[in-house]
Image 1 (tube, helix red, strand yellow):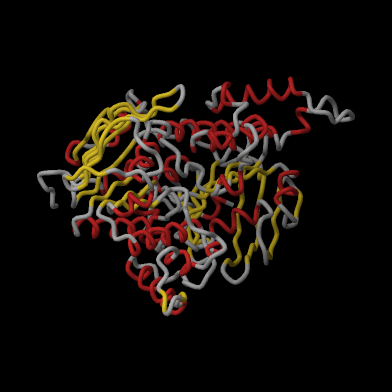
Image 2 (tube, one colour):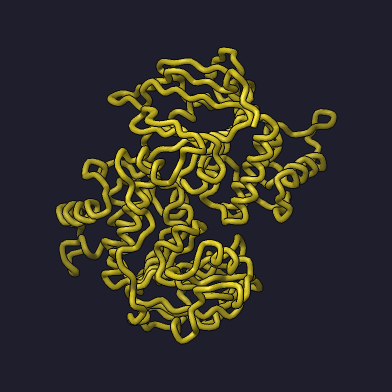
Length: 519
């Protein structure tokens, strides 16, 4: 590891005031070249504000920034790029209607005689993707057709190829990636470290922080509360610094289903296009089931098919005794299903509507004056939403605000509150804690448990393996579009789950459930 005597990046006494609040209060951050530096804290701790100051989106009220010992003024994103600052944001900046190649070269297009050389644009994109080991993404595909994980990798390729940064920030880069792609990303980060780049890794996945980071800085309430070297770091220590108290066991279930509940939803011989074949699946009351697989193995498509969101679907789906593939998410919701989607901003929330309206929108029948007088009772809405908001940890003062003003964790809790108010019998959650801090994760886990304990069936698609093992009653593994294993998380280890996701065979994995135990 190459650590010069003067940090590559030095931020001193960074303070940022907004009307009525101090977002950052005298923050110091030193990042050495040739290191991977974790930046941790709950949503609202100040991480995003600090990054926006480094990126030139905000100007600090007080404080200074040095790059390689030289004072710099970063007053715009362009100035940040000129000083060698590259940022891969959690909320991606790609343009969905352009191709992968066009996005990678945007603003830096190769030209010939004053015209964009389209052939060279494609070559540049291919080199960029090859450099980070992404050979499966076609540079000529539209970004809108890519999964979130693929978009994340394209974003990384763009920043590394176009900017060649001295300091690069990865803002929650692994939230949309499966284990295989996380390892690929860590290889990229390690290579950057070996090349002398200062890497800042922002994450709520503390096990990943422990694996990859040389040092971590923890923020709480706009201040630095700790700087922890690799040799001193532990999961408990990082959680304690983040929350300001001893961290409870984040993933431990307080109870587990006995597996004997009524079947709420099932799939028989479910096939989707040419990629997913003959899936049989049962979801029972009181049970939390996880669908796991590497990127592209079909777990998200199966979950979406159950909610009526998919094409080229064959086979049978039954929800609460009603057989037939749901024609649309609306028809599935009428049968008692709910969905927390992978991309809450694009698919789950109405960003300009209030938090209260986002929660109540699927439960209008509960808040009208009567079945005959379909006029909303605002008093009833305030009471019911207030109750479910309190259960999910959403402050009452936040309910009238536009949901876009909330942190990622509170936005996700708003979606969960929507389905708690709806009293759904089947809740499908795709990456339910993506971009959510550790405190909000615990809250979401508890509410999912409460939902299952109340008699609902919960289906989770997650790339967070400790989350899957800690939260599930049963784990269904997909490999190349078919179910290849069902695991008991009380017995299976993280390594065995990963082996099953890679297509491992029965003799290599303990914790396999017998067919009669899961039928």
